[in-house]
Amino acid sequence: MTRVYLDNNAAAPLRPEVKAAITQAMELTGNPASVHAGGREARMVLEGTRRAISDLIGGQPDWVVLTGSGTEANNLAIKGAAPEHKHIIVSGLEHPCVAQSSRTCGLTVHEWPVLSSGVADVEWLEHTLRAWPQDNGAPLVTLMLAHNETGVIQPIKRVARLVREVGGRLHVDAVQAAGKIDIDFEDLGCHSLAIAAHKLGGPIGVGALMVAPGNKLTPLIVGGGQERGLRAGGANIIGIAGFGAACKAAKRDLPHFTQLAQWRDAFEDKMRKAGPVKIFGDQAERLCNTSCIATPGFAGQSQVMALDLEGVCVGSGSACSSGKPRPSAGLVAMGFGDLASTSIRVTSGWATKPEDYQACVEAWTTAFNRVMELA
Image 1: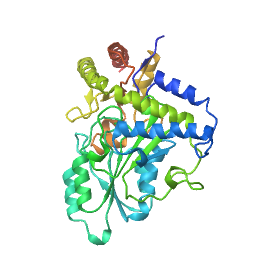
Image 2 (image 1 turned 180 degrees about the vertical axis):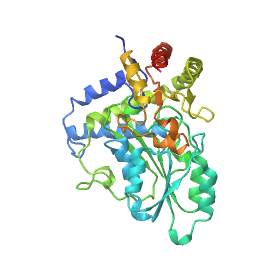
Image 3 (image 1 turned 135 degrees about the vertical axis):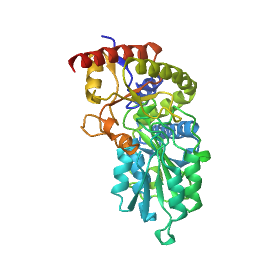
Image 4 (image 1 turned 60 degrees about the horizontal axis):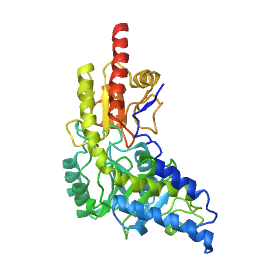
């Protein structure tokens, strides 16, 4: 059976150029902290990846802190900034790594509500910040750039202006958005921004945090001076080499994601005709590759398994919480708790073809009709 892969928001397939970069890096011998030739060769890989990251998302190469994952990058941004603040404002959309890090960083947490469209309620934030007590100190604020399940893109620039007006700090989780839309770190106006290699077609286990100058962070991992003292430990040169190659390829392929929007929209039209589905976030600006679809009475996990039997891979919920019987926190925050457990996430990527979407429609229709017959 030929497998159709439509779970790119969990992890994109490894790109050919990434495999080549990883293979080449395996031939290197040397610690990038060493001054001999072997060390300098390893250091060139590391610094080349910083340049590739800044070329993809803006900012400067020396603002990049390389980490072991997007989750670590988000934790560093939040827990590393926590000593500078008393309060943190967290949107209901955040990935579990941001939500849980925010709730365990020792700060007073303020829950930021979400509209049914999937967009964070900016009017609420504006009102909250204008009434912010001075003795609370400047707040730390978190908001993802694009939601990992619905694909809804958030108004980061407007939020950044509001946060800066009160002297606060804004962290943005851009793990899902990087490589799918144009990102300019400095233009967004946030103070830090996290990305991860495996969403771009790079290896799992490598991430990065872009940190604007002047934003103090306390390291989570200590014991060495690597990454400007913000992340101790020997660098994963092999993974970092793949990350750099993935960033270069993702920047080159950004136009492809515009084309994916046409395929995605056609797919959603067919799904609406095939069954009584609800598509989350379809009235807002979304990532071009993302469809989050609920079918009342048809459990999300059952849909995933039925499609898998037909050779089609899709997701259900956040990749970091898939397999656990809990509703999507993001969909619950949007007011769709009753439908959250019936949702699937269909996401395309750099290797997707139009016929992949058609195969998904056909497999889903077969599964849905079978469920209706048994009802």
